[in-house]
Image (tube, rainbow, N blue to C red):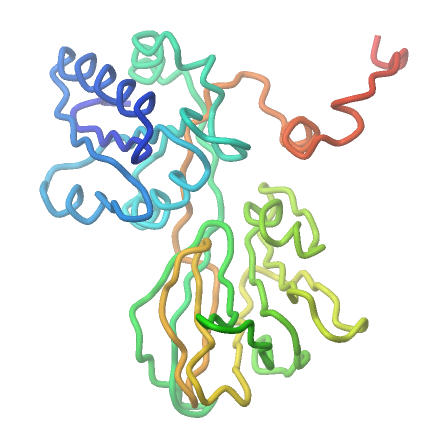
Length: 306
């Protein structure tokens, strides 16, 4: 990998993340690399400025923070095919990040990257648009939104917690009408986040699939389903005349859904690319460690492994 132009995004409001970003910037600039650096957070979105400020290829994005910081980066950098080195600096769970211990000798990390001693993991993303019109002649009325974890259709109101009624179609066939708190359409990466909290399935990120999970449905027969990645998921809000129903991408507000409009969700045409520094990366170990499964807390002798 060439390191001629690199993005460094640090977690907004976290001094440790900012300090490491400044240290990395100095190291890369000493290697004749141009650095684009800035904070990323709820009120800080540096990526449109980064991407608009240069016509040259961006070789790498170093994202120093937690999973939320990584999700924001992937929505903008995935479509540009920019690989992401995500490091847990100031994060909590760190499902999507490399452990900080592997990054403490950052000069050695730059050497590894320049000598191609790393792996790249591709993770499926979702795209969504809002449409008007009937099913046979839809008219898009919004920009395209992207998500690495999930698209969520659910209501939001300042003074109450409204219930939603959502009809879902997959490839033009009606599946169900969900009455409850909303509906999640998730990637395998997102299956361990909000979807897992809603009792949805956990899917290995090496698979290509879409998980559809109702949030607190008012029917015991409403169940999560896993569908092929090439499916078109259409979600129709029913009976909402106060414009409470909204589309969310990775927990961030995308847009409101007006009466007569519906959401179409498909697999994105691009993946998010993550740099893997760990030589023995295991998704199952990540599950044990991050979700505190029994194997991470109670250890027995595994004689069959010796």
